[in-house]
Image 1 (cartoon, rainbow, N blue to C red):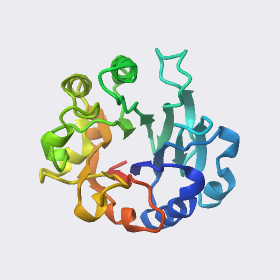
Image 2 (image 1 turned 180 degrees about the vertical axis):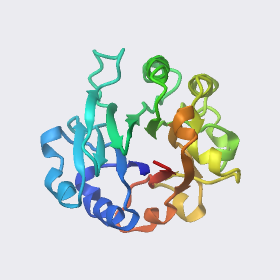
Image 3 (image 1 turned 90 degrees about the vertical axis):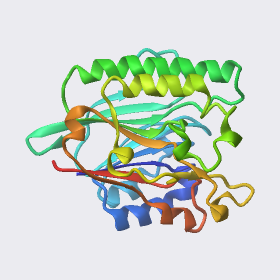
Length: 260
């Protein structure tokens, strides 16, 4: 089973790229972020024609997450438990049948948090705390679990082109890294780092200042795995070439392959 995450940065603008990548990469499950549309505006028929079942948790103009799956999606949860009053569409969870077992998958669009410090950063840290609490509850099921998405977290200096330039950014501040480590310390594994040790592999390049051309990127799109999912992990990589397509998202797909 191939599971991917991709911050699509507007499904309306990027639909041709999504369909081209689906045909090329043939993922079984895709977690999308930053749809920037309501549920009824998602191009469901085009994606279904490509062979995928669709679940969305949308929001007008901003945010929005989706899960696309070649298998039917079950036990769908919209919104992060513990954040019931949150008006921002940032979390979608579902169960995907896989042979004689199931995989629980979440599509996550964690808050950016800038400017930091400030209310947006406080919201980010609170969201991360609620995510950690929910992840702890999910891990009690002792099943393959994949928490995939745009975490807006740069885990280490190896995941950024210039650590000093990002030192005060909400994506790399000490409190952010503390929360991310607390999540990992529940027993979750970063799928990419389980497969690759080489530094400076990125999943995001800004549209400004020639970041793509200079390879001034950051790695902020992650698949965090339970022990049961990690045991099944066979490969993980970043489809960097997609950033060079016409009208690209500033993120590229990150995928992991599991022996299911």
